[in-house]
Image 1 (cartoon, one colour):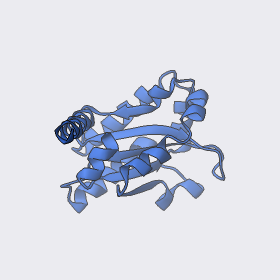
Image 2: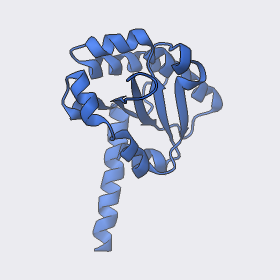
Image 3: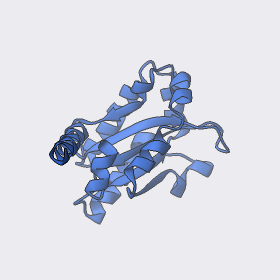
Image 4: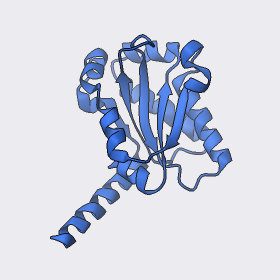
Length: 168
């Protein structure tokens, strides 16, 4: 529902590579989701975007980048000016810890409009079992929605449910 809301309002999907220090800290943390959420909240608050609807999850995928932990998510960027988007991008990168080498620079953060929420969600869910096992978490602990996104997702769900009832 968070992705559906984000698509409906013209928001953005993102992929965010973590810096090596942040990744090591999260891989060894007892509660990596809370640690990352607090870090994101801190950096978004510092740039005045703490109430921006945001949902994300951890992913660890095998591949050429060496099984790196990273984040994927959605953020409601509707109504933001270019300067706000720049502040958002800077806050996300700071929260992730600046990455270097192949995953740093322009590859650290990829943010683009959500065109097909269901497809993005399918992509997000492809490695949840493996990621949860590596982080020693239940699969439902890989996800995080801030309070604003939780409300927006609930509103989107309620509207869809009402529309379905009216059709039947």
